[in-house]
Image (cartoon, rainbow, N blue to C red; front, side):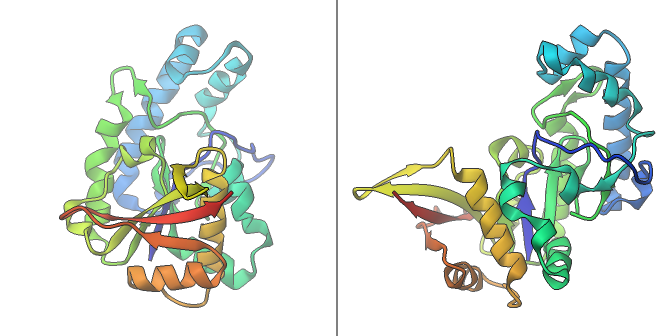
Length: 257
């Protein structure tokens, strides 16, 4: 099983650790593209702070993150699962997992990233600022940089794919047509008085809890039915939406108000 997670805007900057080594990151097929994105980001942030902040979508109080982006190859690194600190990762709470569950998490999860493409949770990275929807000068849209690489990796994956990415990060590497039948997109819905609506507030937290449940399970999900059984046994209410012809199926996680 391959669980695809988005990154988070919120990050914890490591105080100590090794410096960045692109050659040691998982998915070595992405090394060349990572180097190009890193170079373009560093070049942007080494120039006008105002221009860089505008390009990166940062406010006046976040200009320090522009400066930090100029020395990412010198900053201390920590496992990605510890660097990302947003709502999803708080709910996932990897630090409290058993050693066996943490190993399963690292084997099963791939984290999407505008800078790194895809990472395993144990990959050592610095804190950085680069959202997936950014267009970098001289390089272009990050979706154009990553799409072929990431979709190619997903096409070569024979495992069940569980896609929990947000739209911005799906655009970096959409699921290939060949994944239909062996992939599912997770959607979080709230049901109130028989009416279902897409969740915004609890969406990330629910996906984090679902990823945690999958890491904690000793069962290996090889089919969508297996996935549903594991999540149901963990207390999640799940329902498979009728599939469009030839499309990747959607698995709804239902929250009852």
